[in-house]
Length: 357
Image (cartoon, rainbow, N blue to C red):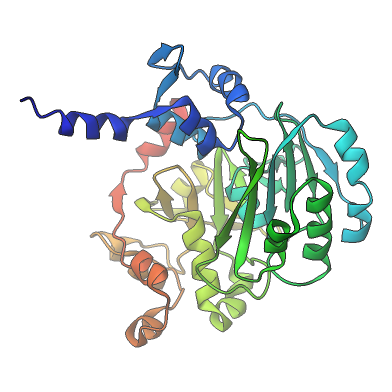
């Protein structure tokens, strides 16, 4: 008898059904066809039972490696959560059947999930992002974004989120999740029976305040910059900062080292301070989906990183001290594992190659 198990496992790793693709992208199956078509993704097999796609194509689309054509959401930016709640009837009237609701503790997480608008006012390649913490999506992909509704604690914002959810048809036992401090993200998806299912996502660390790290958009990628102004806050709560960095590049695949300030500036890896001085980032940590963490070592000579180093050693080189906590084993396991990653070094030419694709 022919053993087809290895082939079956390979196909399961490489291919994904329409239903699973829609679930991964958090959209309806009806909208999937238009989304993949608008992004140049072709199914590798079509049948009356559904289509098959390359899993890698859907993963790229999910993580922003393929630019999606986004509809402009309705933005609800009122001064308080109570005022935002008062607009829900107007929003419901302007949307079709609501199929998805996403609630976040912090817009940092919303941006990483793909809910962001890129500023058109920034003249440089490094652009600011705007997001929201409560997103409603209908069956057509139209969205309404509320900035003052959120989740993750028992305050006014989550309380109003709970009221809005119940007005949208979420049962009270499921809407209560947004007031649970264990969850930074709560997602609601309507199933084929027309009932909302809840998916609360527990944070790996306890967050007591919003994220300090600021996310930007740079040539099609989400990036985060090492900020010297936050150094005191970093020293006060290293776990929180490292978790934010980990969220941006959870699986560091490679590191780019610029041998000179001039080379980094030439490739756009710099910002200007209030006085117009250049702040240059010569160490770039990247993950497999293209997100980047820009680091600014205190010296221009990167020869100390010539041989493969783990994330811990890279951060230490860039002035972010972690040795004491590692020696005392005080970090959560997820951070310890991340600090032990050894990203491979890739040449600067990789940036030029990616830009030309």
